Image (cartoon, rainbow, N blue to C red; front, side, top):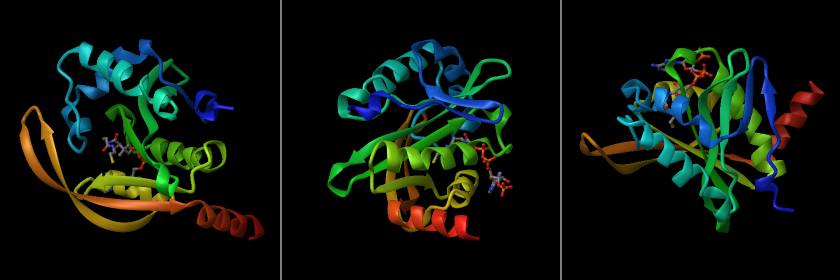
Length: 195
Ligand SMILES: CC(C)(COP(=O)(O)OP(=O)(O)OC[C@H]1O[C@@H](n2cnc3c(N)ncnc32)[C@H](O)[C@@H]1OP(=O)(O)O)[C@@H](O)C(=O)NCCC(=O)NCCS
């Protein structure tokens, strides 16, 4: 069975993880056009709604053809708004590893939403999709992202260089790389159950 085409929906308190839809473009444009949200990302800020439409059709909807799920939208179930995404990208089949990326509307920051979403995504990556290792990277100055990754239990591995090319120019950046191994994750989980 192609499990990446059959992703479970996950409810976390007032927030739901469900697959990104084409109709999410206006909500994606709202946070994607916020320069503070995209400051540490390799895309944005969006200027036209068409950029959000192209991101959904060209990046998210293109993933199944590469064996990846489309990606999760994070939805505020109290008002139906799509407030961010968390998704698997850049698979490294040789090492049975896949990378995770996330972004959230600024109005929802610092409520623990992304930490909870990331914690929910880990068993999906290991047990539903069958990867052995999960990877996440963040720009060195992105302290919020670093905190989320650490709280979810990832281990720092290395720092690497990255050239970022955005509408305001090209710049050299440093990225911190983290991974989580399936065996370590299930070991920790089992240990916690025995406490
Ligand atoms: C990174 C991001 C997804 C975090 O989402 P979130 O739901 O606000 O995260 P959480 O609430 O789960 O956790 C945020 C943590 O960062 C801490 N934090 C907030 N601002 C911080 C800062 N400037 N430096 C360091 N830590 C900071 C918070 O206190 C919290 O930690 P705590 O629980 O120990 O208090 C969100 O800020 C975002 O979308 N940023 C822009 C996009 C982005 O950077 N994506 C990641 C690319 S790698």
